[in-house]
Length: 231
Ligand code: SF4
Image (cartoon, rainbow, N blue to C red; front, side, top):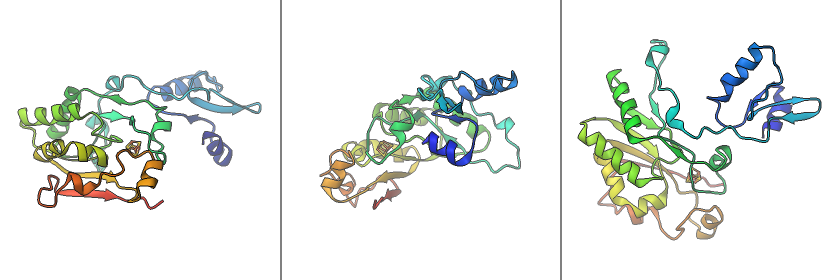
């Protein structure tokens, strides 16, 4: 894809993967007058060849990334808090780019560090969050711990996230727990009602259905949101 981007747009450099560590390395190379930086993941085209494209830049420890600082955001800027507790997804749905983008890696932050972000946001007056995780419910124990900590620390928030049908089917108690601690919307991809199509997409447990996990009279989440991709 980076080849098409470079050919069609004429951009000088493309970062393959996560930019937080490699972008400063690129900038410092450019600052020193080095236009052919040796930074794996920062691709450039010279003398008929692509350079540094053997690697996708991936950060192993996402907990080491600096916290968001509200002080750096212009007060006039409309700020909508988003939280990222993990990057990547261990599933391999055939239509999804997440696995390729993160080179198949899934990384998580600790519950403590996410709770610390939430406390910061609450102190700035924000209490509603969108979890930007590709799939927040990959590690159900993590989510249980997160819900427990929200409750123990009496942090009253509202939050939304993305999950998978089979997780909801297998763990209805988890979804209930999330609803008790402020989760009001979960986006899930139904994708298809045809078992063979689901199987081809590598969606697991194709015979299970959304309503199996959510009897009509026992909807734990106030706004279940379905994403149907007819493709
Ligand atoms: S569960 Fe979601 S994020 Fe994970 S591979 Fe499938 S579509 Fe992508």
